[in-house]
Amino acid sequence: MLLNYQTMICELTGLDVSNASLLDEATAAAEAMAMSYSLANGKRNKCFVSNSIFPQTIDVVKTRAEALDIELVFGEVADFPWDQADQFASAIVQTPDRLGNMNDFSELFDRFRENKVKSVVVQDILSNAIAKPAGEMGADIAVGSVQRFGIPMGFGGPHPAYLACKDEFKRKMPGRVIGVSKDVHGNPAYRMAMQTREQHIRRDKATSNICTAQALLANMSALFGIWHGPQGLKDISTRIRFRAELLQTQLSKMGIKIVTDEENFFDTLAIDVVASDLSSADSVLAEFHKFGINLNKIDESTVGISMNEYTTIKDLAELIEIFAILKEMAPEENDEPYLDANFHDAVSYRGMPPALKRQGEYMT
Image (cartoon, rainbow, N blue to C red):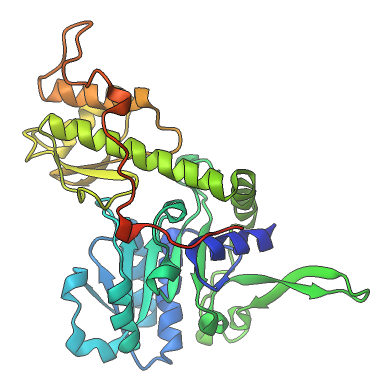
């Protein structure tokens, strides 16, 4: 099953090698940073971190960088200090990012490669069913959470993480890799083919000292992938993107200011509540809490809403109704002026913009 998991991750990311899971998304990003530092043989001690990655990931990367004496440089991707590129071992970016924006980093990764900077992308594995994966963008390393593949939220964890990379970097990959060997009778035998040996012996030389994987959860996510298959995963991803589109269209009509890019998004919309005349993020969150709904507080003036495979049209109608109450547009009974009569078909499905669409097949 772990071999199935690795195969699924390689197929979805479009990269050559995957390990048998890691602890969680934030640690996986820190592992990728450490791995890149190790690949540079300690000659490059800087790592660029995009401002738009999740705050919990930034926190873990900071802690790991401190221990390894790696200097972190934070900033917008467009402001990468190219004049100092020879000092950077890696750069970490994310898609979709904390504001829900999807990005195609192909040109950026080409430039990183020219400057021998390892490109690390944190990517939502479910989005890869319809969006351009790390491999098609030319990324060196891809990491992320696999929670969306049939793993319960579990009050925040545990959730398996994936780490996949190009074949040339596999010797520095943290964690365990399952391979196919032969037993004494010549039959296929599945076994641990590779593990960072230094994890147990020369610890100061190790890529990673974390021995913990999430093998049970990796098995569950692999079963989820097998059960749904490539078309099933594509259907789930398409449905999620469609729900986000519906919500975007309806909220925009109500004068709600959405800061997520108009086209380049997958499952998340970020809303500027101040520009939408809705007081503050805290007051909006408090109103939604009354209905048992959690939104994401991005900052004092921004909240995020994310769709998942369970989000229904009824859920969307409830979200819109609460925003209508906040905007003092709430309808009289049996009157819903803020909802299109043909709400289900309120937009013709636009889907991923052509530049962000996945080209290759997967899990065939």
